[in-house]
Image 1 (cartoon, one colour):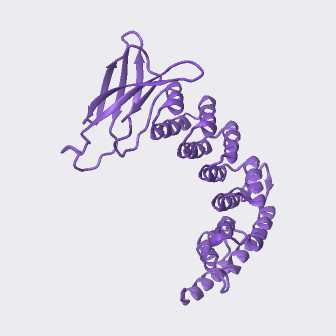
Image 2 (tube, helix red, strand yellow):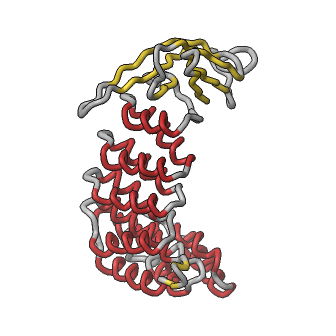
Image 3 (cartoon, helix red, strand yellow):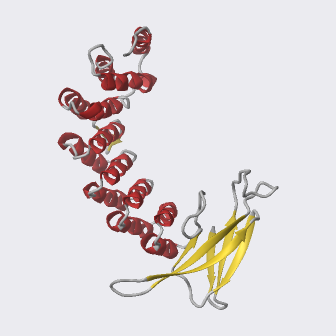
Length: 320
């Protein structure tokens, strides 16, 4: 959905395009949805405690592309398609950064704030990153903060990485988990150091700790400023496998997942094969068996044969 404002005529123009439609009870014979959707225009008062007022209109959307005009007394701060989110949908917002920032900060609906975060990340500029950074520390709903973390990871700016690192202090484990997963997509020395610190020291959440270890495997295989962290990372993963027994083998399974990223390393393969043997706790053993596929992709012919032989032997076992 695209938005523009005509200051002379005080008209807000929205262009709504249906790009994917499915047949169903609410669709027309042409395959396009025929819906009555509320659109909200949000106004934010100035001051230390801003108040939000939303003026709503209900419109019919039934064509592939529709231009809608709304006479308003003043320019809105943000625009919310399907105010209250009554319909399951995917929305792509083509708004100016100012409107997206206001929607991310002030829209009462968390799903609309998530849509704004996605659109801001696509802008990819410093102003967008600063807005996302603010939301990562201040949005009241953990689901929005987790989505913001994912979106920051997609922006290729140093400031985005710095903002993402602040999310490691979030009190909600699900947000920290999104942050470490995002850091795993950013192969820099800063992300490596942050993930390594969590892998060494742990986290109150097993899932965050395991996620950081798994992400460390992705970053640890990269060439970071001309330096390889392979041996240092493999040594840490080996120590985790030896020392970190815990609930359902969540953490140690994360280490196995990290090892599977070292596709050309015989040392990593030896560790994985060790934990496919009988006597290994079942959850950890299953993780190691699953890791044989990914790690085989860069191994030499001899090691691939070893993996196939191990799988052949496993195929004859009965798991109880």
